[in-house]
Image (cartoon, rainbow over all chains, first blue to last red; front, side):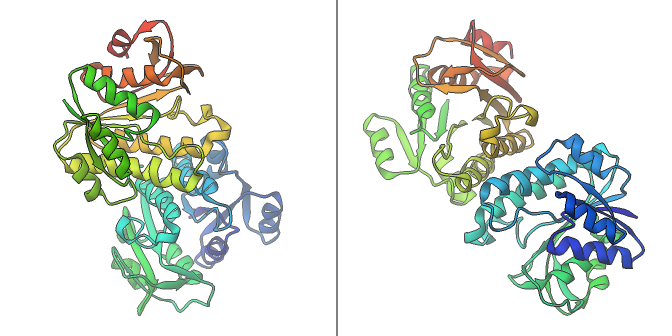
Length: 213
Length: 213
């Protein structure tokens, strides 16, 4: 599959690109800076420059020809809620609309643990959770074949390959590497289609975990 | 009709309460401070204390027994995008869910001119527009009998009683008083049901304008 990775320069996105290649897919890095395009192309990865604050049409041009979209972009913790609204919410939803415009059916988004249940939102991250919540709701209503992956606290540790994945999990954490592997394992796994699941470190192999969500 | 006005202490909300009374409706002021409750009750207006950052159930308790909801609350210009996400987006959508929980079918929201068309958003207010856009989308999908009123730049001048109302209008402005009168005129006007419209000052009487949207 040709897979557009939106936010490919991010900490999860970079690993998704690598694992897609390992799995025989063709990643396309969707990034927001020209030097990031060059850096991916130097590694032999197709890349496209897309500004998520741009129009749906501009985003769609960057996605054209892909079979699936992985949305792992985020405005990050240091930019404030303006960018949270513009990137994590509206940027995500414009990317869904752009995918449909480009005739792409498969869409995976990286969300946050329990984003679907307000009562469990981390108080200090509440505005961020609002953005994720409504992006996820828009994806559910989009008509795209979606998977919403809601990881717990993200760690930069090496992955273990063992996770716990279910509709509702208690708070926990997970290495970004395992999130990236779960994304790639979900891509063609029909049991993840049109579903969302929480994801933390656990005791089940990733392939098996995504088969049973 | 018993009409819950969410944000009744705001500049539009206060006038909505007054015009509802004039029209023979029974307003209920939904406000966030105890002294506002007292102030409305002293004027003989039923009032309820509701925190839009609270749960759907808490909001629903404040709405119970009403026949309609007018949502004119807003976090205001001075609070930053955190509150925009929590009040203008999530607070609005929780109020929709609360209305349904309370068995209320009619819901009018005050949005912003062209909130439905990203390409026409006022650049300096973009995060605010994102919040309004997604609140409006949620209302369209809510199953409630909705009206989305999208006024242009809000003025504190006296109203003229003459407006222009249509699905798409060029930028313009309008006194808050005319917005409040349009809300009350829309309440029972079936031609506004399940519709959104832009609203600026114009040359048509308000009653006639809402009949023809």
